[in-house]
View 1: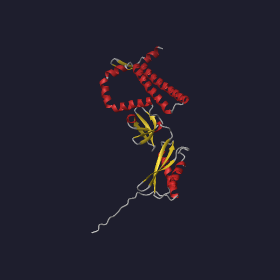
View 2: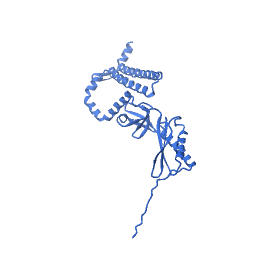
View 3: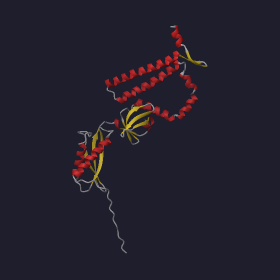
View 4: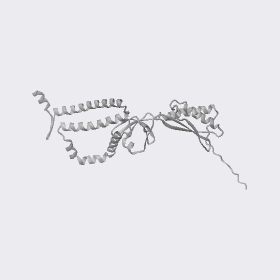
Length: 278
């Protein structure tokens, strides 16, 4: 026992009034390991609780992230105390330095605060589909400083959290999963209007991602300069890949137009020439 005590009290290094012993190193390692174990147990408990209460993935993820950040802050304070360093004295003694760092990292702190707001308010959750500055992304991870999203081009995008909280962001997932979309097309004057509307509705209904029993309606919008302008309305739950759905419907419309001799006209301009008689 005396040998164990002597080993634990052995000084690794000594600097002025401070020293680091084997016991203090072991204490820090134990706090770190215990924190990891507790977080692992909490993660499993939150996951189990979300299944029982049928919480969505984003809510359970946000709850765990908040717990993780708080627990790590507490763990770091205990680690400092374990090596006889008072966290309060460090903060008080380096106040001027912290002010300088704060000014230099103002945007970073803004992003971190925005991350806490996102995790607490749960206005944006993992799995949500956002339209940020014209880029549609599906949120894969919400970090403390930045969130990770996947674009429709399968490109990973890192979004600063402050961009999400301060910019105009469209959250497609906040509404019902069933969303109404539309396609516009123009046909040549003289075309059978009823036939065109029928083709538009048939083309939309044939696509597997268009909701069966949902609204599918073709409309004559306007008498354009070069064409009769139509619109087809349909509902779909495939919000993230809706551009591919629209492309497929356009291809079907084009094929059916060709089969029925319906043409999509080029823009036309009438030019009138006046001759000057002398």
